[in-house]
Amino acid sequence: MNCPLCQDNINRVDYKNTQFLRKFVTSQFKIGTSRRNKLCNKHQRGIANAVKLARFMALMPYTRLQTVKKNI
Image (cartoon, rainbow, N blue to C red; front, top):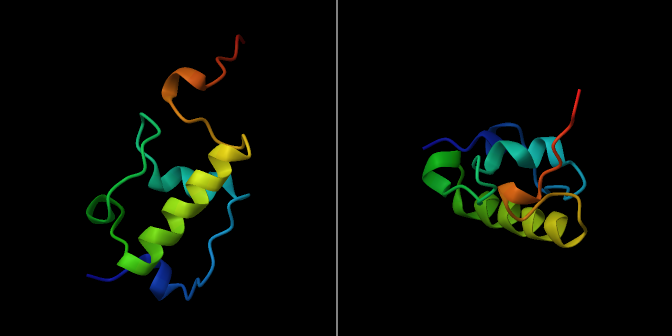
């Protein structure tokens, strides 16, 4: 299995880049499994820690119910 982060030579995952982290989270804002994300163990742990830190810093929601609905 080829990890896309290994192929792009990404060593650290930034918790402030929420658009990038959103790719590895399900529609219910759960952290996706390594099989779903197609990541190696090292990068899966890094993504999980970055998502948890982004949630703690209020950059990402914990659940789907915490998202803000925009009235346009």
